[in-house]
Amino acid sequence: MSRVDKVAKNMKFALICQAVTVLESFILRRVFVACLDEVYLGLNGLFADILSMLSLAELGFGTSIIFSLYKPVANSDTEKIKSLMRLYRNIYSAVGAFVLIAGLSLAPRLDLFLKEMPNVAHLRLIYALNVINSGTSYFFVYKASLLFADQKKYVELVINTSVKFVGVLLQIAVLIFTQSYVLLMVVTIFTTLAQNICISVSTDRRYPYLKDKNVCPLGAEDKQTLKSNVGAMVFHKFGNVVIFSTDSILMAKFVSVVSVGLYSNYMLIRKAIIMVVETMFNGITSGMGNLSACEGGERRCDAFGNVFFFSAWIFGFASICLAELYNPFITLWLGERFTFGRGVVLLIVVYFYLYCMRIPVCSAKDAMGLFRQDKYKPIAEAILNLVISIVLAKRIGIAGVILGTIISTLLVPFWIEPLVVYRWGFEKSVLGFFAKFALYTLVTLAAWRLTALLCSLTADGFWGFVIKMAVCTVVPNAVFAAVYCKTKEFAYLKNVGVSTLAKFRRK
Image (spheres, rainbow, N blue to C red):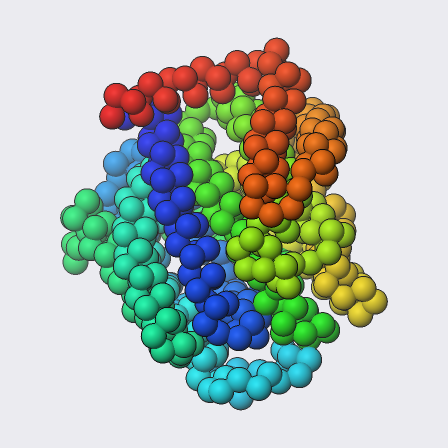
């Protein structure tokens, strides 16, 4: 299969599998709020962010080793692949053990993360089960990195989706018949283990040399490269964890656990979209990694330009949909009491747009192994994010936490990440990138204003939501098509889309 064919296949399976996963998540959340008190939603989000902080122990080895795998996979160098995978296994086993030990040690001091302790039975047991689920996720899963590097991410997706489908059915049954959060977490732990074991077995069957006992240690040059990349990724890992895993902690500490539960509903929808998008970009990233290992800078730059245009279209469309459909959907799904005001919703959407527009840049940076050039950036971003978010949270609550993240994003990664990609990856000026970013954003804003005006004329309720959804689907895409139809990026993606659809039909 060609590089484009593999990307298309990964994207095809990504869309199908993630659509199933998203539907399962929404159904499970609806049953969750019907069977358990809303404070459990807050605890879910809080514990997830606490445990994300412990993922610092991974130190960025995953991204570094995946980058190191691109070239040996492209060259079918099985000996080096075996050496890298053996090292990956040892590291992730140690990380899993650390998360279990460190996470459980925090159980007696949960009050550090809460404004006030909620009246919930077996609170520390619930937290411990969340720790076990997080810790066990590191065992066996390392083998999925080889599938990613070999552009076979679809294998992992199919396995995860199939196992999770069974797990969700069991979780729903537990909620309906027992209303026990403890039993719910037990089922979740077994589902996580089953997913990882199935991926491990499938990978061993596809790459039988992974079971060889005779594995050579990495050479000195490879070790030095990996050490250098990991050293840079430590900073990136730290920054990402602090930035993306502290919102719920700050809300629980300065606002309330219930507010974390409300926020988690918006995050579930946001994460569902990002999960689909990032899975698609995983296919693109592995293709770019293969491209970077085999081609020069000009080809990389052209490929990135097309990916960035595609991103601007998809993320602009998604942001407009969220701005107009967030609250109407949550009202129909869970009830109006689970919604925020318009101002907070728009802040969530602004951050969603900024975050998503960074995805193609970060994907290109990872694919080209540009880890060291901006290794101090995440530290500056993390410090700014924490300071600004805490100050604003004390003054304006939840809106302050989100606004702090937006401000820190604009001050640091917004300009540094593309600068790194263009200067060291493409060896070109970054001004063209910012000009395109500004154009794409202005077009998105114009499309949103028109969409919002038309949506304001519709009624509430189910049929009003259906009409809003139709408006959000047609208007932004019509505006984008009218503005971009003469561009070379539009022509390229149109040709790729037609070719891909033809291949899907044949299959």
